Length: 326
Length: 123
Image 1 (cartoon, each protein chain N blue to C red):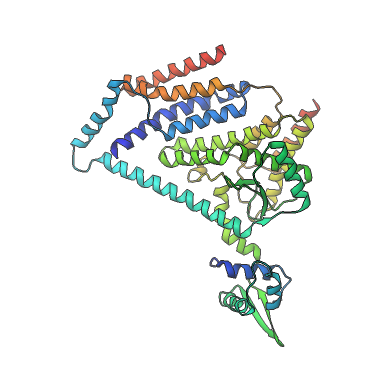
Image 2 (cartoon, each protein chain N blue to C red):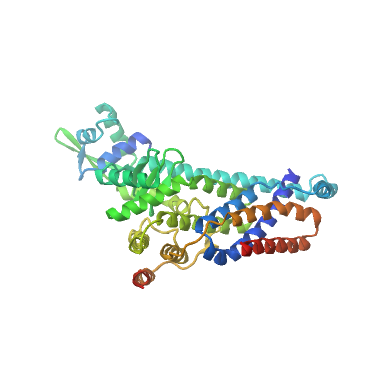
């Protein structure tokens, strides 16, 4: 258990460094690459957090067991063992909490959600399913207790709408946005993020990252919703975002909060109104994957932590040079 | 307040659907279809709701009238209020969210953004 803890701890440190570098370069990269590229880049980082195993050089493999033995020599119950136990307890607690919240939410949806089956809704749904190529049976529910539209269900998707007045155009844009979430299986990616958060709960960075990725998920979904649209539709879409927030603010009793903060709404709208042609940078996603895999080698070659940072900076610079050349 | 079991909730929902007061036959009418129970069960459920303080009842002639003491909104708030926030942050557990709170959006901010969008489109 202690060696597993140390493995994850090492993974936490190296992945936080990679994530920090990635976050640092995000403004620069977002000029060149689509929001979807950046989103998948984050997905690679998150997988790196979940799977701590890295290819190591032969002498690198020896490192961990010696470290553990040294730590265990002191007393019967080493502080390291206690830390590892706390770590496991934390994971279980975070998981239980996540599960409980989800369970309560689904229960409330089943109890309070009212299925919308008006001809208007069904016509919009049919049209948008054709546009997005979603063939699954999708149902739309109205829920009084939510403040923003959302999607649940991995196989039987349900689009949940708050109790708001929405025009025909607003409804079709919202439904298209949610169908794209479904098509991309964003709920699975959310699950990966929750898994990473549970495993690294003691690392403050992971909490900030999960927020940043949710944001990137929304931005890239907005962008996909806006494919093949003109400036007028983009304006309409941005105004729908603002409209939903305005109505949320009116429902003061339930809307004590809204996920979309000032900065995030601004970024979303800026991105929607941005019509520059960008590329999908497979190379960027691959570069992040290589960087993640190479951290194991770096650790093996340089047991010293500071040198390791240097190695990573070099790796990142190399990755950046590859990008520049591309 | 306590969370209502499903059957009692269905009866309560039927009560909320009418301008008060409601009678047991009105509740029966609302529950027709997939969720229909015999009248005795509905009466039992109604008296249980009176015991729990969700309803007040009055005898008027042959009929018993039921008045809701808990509004739909209050009960909804009770059942869902606590966890809506967490779910809205995409199931992000907000133990640390206080560290990450940036300014809340004001109406002026929204107006500014809307102006910017219009200008952007016309340019």
